[in-house]
Length: 281
Ligand SMILES: NC(=O)c1ccc[n+]([C@@H]2O[C@H](COP(=O)([O-])OP(=O)(O)OC[C@H]3O[C@@H](n4cnc5c(N)ncnc54)[C@H](O)[C@@H]3O)[C@@H](O)[C@H]2O)c1
Image 1 (cartoon, helix red, strand yellow):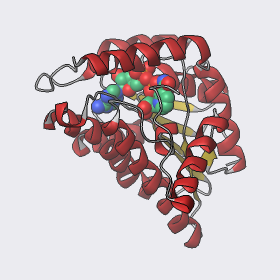
Image 2: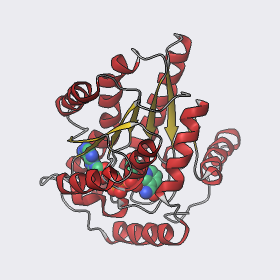
Image 3: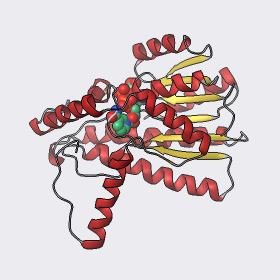
Image 4: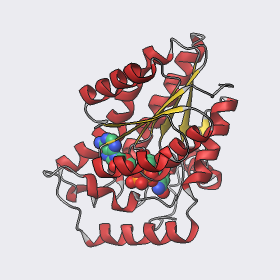
């Protein structure tokens, strides 16, 4: 995409962290921005803050795991602005534990939000995006899409690998068909956001994760993010550049992503499994 002024961007999980930073960035670019989030109070506060950057902001309370809710998001976007040019499927959550310690509902919650949330966004918005001369989808995965093995994070890792598989395959299909819709996958390492508190949004029937191994992972990841995390605004700048250049991979921490891929390649080529790693390394 080359032109952004007066175009329309929809950002899920836009009330906090990376999503909020993308909304801010798009707004500064002169776009109309639709911020979708499940957390009502945070959404209202985000819309108020965004009004200071740009005038054309719409907040829509949305649960991305619910296809009907995403349909409503699309309807309200079309009613307000009559078009959609950029879709960022960014909402994500995380919970986990040791494999047999993870309840079924926890698995469902992570897969429903992270994977089916992205799928619902793509399925619902693609026909609208395809009406434009140029349009773009950005799906937020994680370095966990390349690097498995972080203790207690199996559902998150599986959901993010599924997003990568969906995004790569969708990109190829759309490019083969000559579609005007480009696709990118955003795969960050640590970013300073509210992700360590992701369980704040868990449905009432999803138990809070409490195994000591799990709490230790969270502690280590929080510390790592505090020490080495990128600012969300830096990630948003990379997203903006990637949409402009139609780059598929958006890798704010390329060294982590590539290290994950190299480990897998070595494992496949030599049959030797990678060394056991600590969470967050
Ligand atoms: N922060 C990191 O270090 C990091 C690293 C890699 C990937 N990511 C990914 O970045 C994305 C954004 O997360 P963040 O780090 O900004 O965290 P965050 O918690 O600050 O923001 C996530 C937002 O998603 C919203 N959300 C949660 N469930 C939702 C649902 N069902 N429907 C709609 N909105 C929902 C939350 O309310 C929140 O506003 C996520 O997909 C996350 O997995 C984050």
